[in-house]
Length: 233
Image (tube, rainbow, N blue to C red; front, side, top):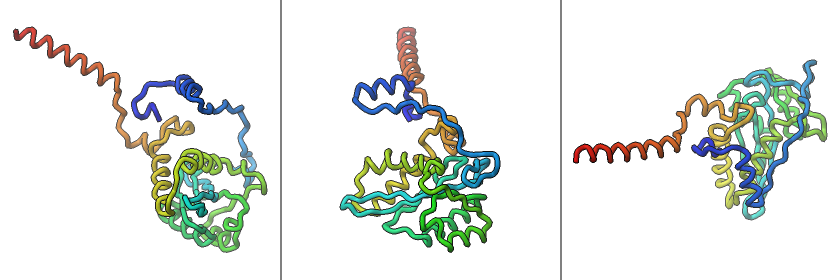
């Protein structure tokens, strides 16, 4: 994020500032093997292209008056893009079908959808509707959220970067702020899996200005003006 705004810093300097301010520096995670296999296992199927595997899950939040609301998050596992975050006091299987229908109409039909065994996801109407449109369901093993790692990681970032930092005084405010964060996540926020920059931003955004060049340019301009004035005198 600092590099996107024009700052020239590396991760070591950022970590030193974190330590000096008493913040928690994330520890380096050990390398782990991938969760997918090559036998077309439904639990460990690897995403190969856009709209190949979508993953969805529910997240719970609260407004200022301790009233709970739910969020339906849907992520494309290949592009890591958050397709939608549906925010409401109550979300049912009908709300899930409505949002899936809208997404498939506007973005295309995925080959698979991955989820846990929640009542909304495993409902008979949902499975029958997905079967009619040609989408295969990938249910993870009960009590194994790591098998749905892409959407679980996204939910953690949503909670750490927004839900734990904002006070929502109404449901409408939560909907607006969460949608703004989703847009920033997709178009501004850097992603290591995408080469530290979002694909959508990389395609459309102009190169960021170099602050050091601007400063040098200003100095050179002042020097040229002094030289010109000396010659004229």
